[in-house]
Length: 265
Image (cartoon, rainbow, N blue to C red; front, top):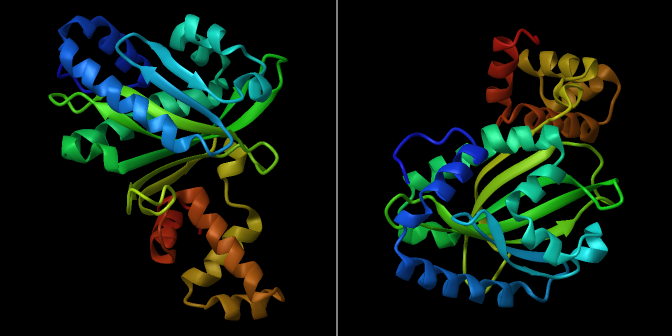
């Protein structure tokens, strides 16, 4: 692959597809064998497992209840390549994934030793259109098999679940976690978590949140703010958590700086 900075997922696909002849076939075969072993560990979980070959822009493996989940025959998805998947991706969600999230993935992989890539789990949530035209909220966890030279993805292996019954908004989550042990699939150490809001209204702080933040910025504790506004302390704590999530800030000090810079308080 070329050494230019990757801007988007679609640029990456075009470049990888174009450069596929430059990849050592022996390395690809070895990586495919590694990929084949991953789904066996995930089979006990209820979801769709997919393996993507980026050099060919298509799925090379699909298992699980895809037809029940989305109404598509697995052969249709595999035969039509990744363009089929992009077409059913909710357009606002794909814009964020295409222009922001995937660039973060590639930058992280390039900064991380290639022999450690298999230790990291990448999580996304997004919406896709089902065969009947309705939307489904999906939650994906997986990892990348990367080129030893460029450190960029050759394959991805992931488990996808339907979280529509649990999802209350259209926010997207993106996280990177490091596996704490091979035996515990969900025993991870979080490295990064970001939230994105395709609907701009969902990312805005409400009038009540700005009011609470103003008091917190003035040095009041959550309990003191609760007493002043005649609310429970747990309500104030929940507002704080929501504001951190909306602004992708890690603590109250960072949240206050964000609010001041944005002119919110």
